[in-house]
Length: 181
Ligand code: NI
Image (tube, rainbow, N blue to C red; front, side, top):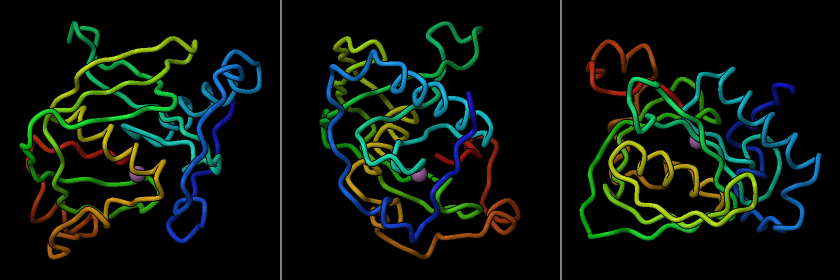
């Protein structure tokens, strides 16, 4: 496994619409290696999510970290291939986000609090589930990466944008997740 270079804002790959993954490719060694490398890269950067365009692959795949069902197990990592999401209800909430492709900056982004997710997992099996709150936020952020959208684009007020030092000084609270995705 290896740690991949993370693309930074300004790189055209982050603004491109990523291509669907051919399901027949999922079981290949090359694809499985990319999945493993993305999980390792996310861990190395202490991220909570990472989309393939962020490691210079313009394909519809992402990995993310969420609390395990049994919270004593801590966090668990997931892979979503060709994901589609649909809001369940219209409720949105503003929350702090950061992005590994826009390091050391935080901003408040409105996101749906409850979504339906359909995707393939890293074995190519169809999965379907509902996500809420922080998990729903991370998935919306990552799926946006597959469509060439960065969280700045989703902000309704750029006034909350903060450098990390100022964010920690003035805005961070214990309940905010510090990670980027
Ligand atoms: Ni991001």
